[in-house]
Amino acid sequence: MRQRPILIAGAGSWGTALAMLVARNGHPALLWGRDAAHVTTLSRERCNARYLPGFVFPPLLSPVEELEEALAQAGDVIVAVPVAGLRAVLEQIAVHAPPDVRISWACKGFEHDTLCLPHEVVEQMFSRDCPQAVLSGPSFAREVAAGVPTAIVVGSRDAAFAADLVARLHHGRFRAYRSEDVTGIEIGGAVKNVFAIAAGISDGLGFGANSRAALITRGLAEMMRLGEAMGAHRETFMGLAGLGDLVLTCTQDQSRNRRLGLALAAGRDLATALKEINQTVEGVHTAGAVVQLAGRYGVEMPIAVEVARILRGDTAPQAAVQTLLAREATSE
Image (cartoon, rainbow, N blue to C red; front, side):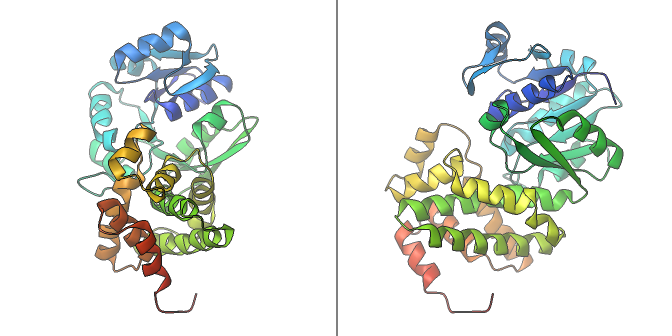
């Protein structure tokens, strides 16, 4: 196992939680963010009061202001920024990365303009010989920081890199599993956000547990249809990156996407709801991307279509529900 520090690029809630996890597991962790003033504050206060308040950094976690300095020390990099910022951060990393750099990422969604999955963006920036991996699964940053038992999946086509990364993450109350289905893991992590918005709308309109269970189940069916059409393995969606993440985000108010759905059901417009949440809500872009991809691959995704229509302002939540209920009966 490598002894050099692991660099976490992205000093938001999830990047901070991952850096804390690595450091608590006995491995030096460097935490870098694009806002140098914020990183200076992290160094001084030894906590991330802005994005993950209430948790003191372990001794092996070191915030760093200069990316070049951090890359000179680290061999492995975990990028933990929203998908919209992934390419820009990778461009910075590519300039200063050592020849043996290994890249992993913990973001979920499709790139806005290209509809690329994160691994496709990484492959455009780095040689395919560069070891690469995705981290995904049902994991809220606050619970990881608090040491709540959590399980994720590490997806990589490089078995040695996957095993090494799992060894750094898997410890105590945090379990990491390996998979080779990078595409399936990323599709599950992206599409579940759309159904989390739907679940928030359903609960916000006062529907009960029956409705939520049906929505999660049919959402999973839509996710699997798109995933298989895009080359993913069907069984991946029955695991942590599919069903696990879907259940988490659809049922827990820590999910920004679910909270957005609750706000829309309460009558708030999209701009107001996003302002109240005040953090990136990936499902807003993902809904439109999913509808485009469903059309491209000839996949039927009626729930995703209605969520996208609500977000565009083309229909109201109540009307979208009626549209779905009025669909012709069919076999499961």
